[in-house]
Image 1 (spheres, rainbow, N blue to C red):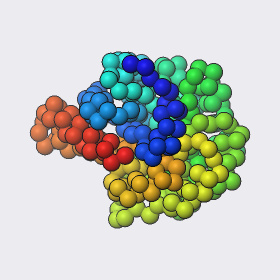
Image 2 (image 1 turned 30 degrees about the vertical axis):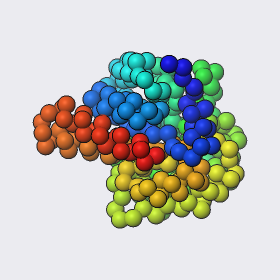
Image 3 (image 1 turned 180 degrees about the vertical axis):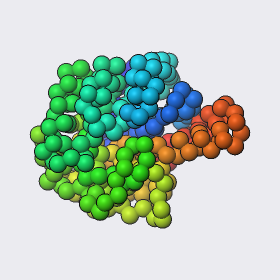
Image 4 (image 1 turned 180 degrees about the horizontal axis):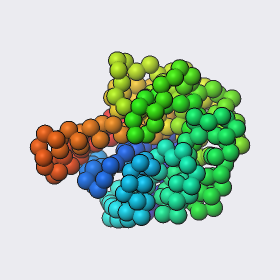
Length: 266
Ligand code: 13P
């Protein structure tokens, strides 16, 4: 199968009005369910590991599993490192031939965020690997990150400065979405998203995709979102079904079914 780059996939999604699905896995069982679901839906997919998982299983193991699935899949499967606050882990993922790595300097000052992002870009780009950065903050409290304060909203000049000074390829933006399930209705600032999209020409990412409704998905896509990240729904579907049935095949089947539904909505 010929495979275009993930950046081309994202640009195509942006132009044609859909979002590339990104799913966070915990191990080989949900990872295989995600790939099978993408095949069923004829959709490209990003397999995303957070450092907690890549460190625990080791980058070698995670990369071997994901590359094997990607090499044999009937759809384009891309390996992504999610929410690394450590440039060194990003470089390790680059050495394991991931397609994209995320350096999350969003909790740092803008200057430090730029420094960290530029460091990862300078390592990744010569190796043909794309980099996702973050500006503004994603709220919530999960494996991906913890953040609860009020100043989450992306400032347009900061986003422009981060992109222009680093050459980062893809950008996660703080617009009110949160990691984990939402308490009540999510309050997403689509106006600010539209302003960032107007100021930049790179694909934007919506984090905190678990539990957002179809209208939010559509409003996000219309205003520049080219990738939507889903983690909690995968993890909870897997853990809940495993707890209820004590049968890992049933847990895998439940993740597969839910992943198909999510992909359809994107
Ligand atoms: P959720 O866990 O809320 O789906 O968010 C996942 C995410 O944004 C990973 O980067």
